Length: 218
Image 1 (cartoon, rainbow, N blue to C red):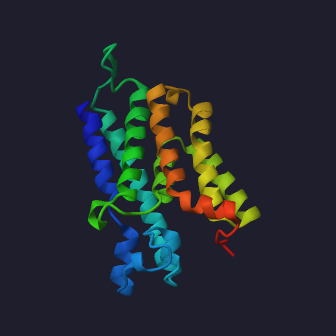
Image 2 (image 1 turned 120 degrees about the horizontal axis):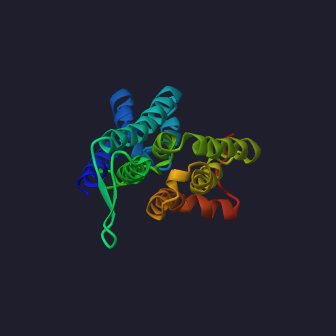
């Protein structure tokens, strides 16, 4: 249990680093929260007119997601976790399930840290880039399916939000089908929570999509 708490705390703090805010503040002297949607993610950073800062934000947000899971996997090599207090079931460092369990915890908390960063009044981004980084470290083949769906939808509809929402929704299903070690109910609940958070974070986009006035990429 200590390992899980350490992973959760470190992942949240890592996720809470507001790279979009920092980059725009340092290089353009602006507050990204006062531009466009007010979001600190790469899409809104692009609205400042700097594609380089947007790309840097995208990469750094993705890296913090990947880094959180990589840290969890490192901890997993030296830990054991009680999966159920009722059954005293234990996952040890020799069990592949431990890597996926701690990785899923890391993914959830790095996304929470990005969405609710304490350094900006618990307001942050939508968590897509951080999730992609985390998901890539948890189940790379599954995230490729989500990314392929994202790209296809964006190319067809030009709605980034629609691609993000459906890509997030598909990931838990792809992970379940492609990674047998992740078919633990607790792990799937954690992964499902990650996807649900991203979808809920896009609720205003969903409303605009239904109303037919969502902004297109081009």
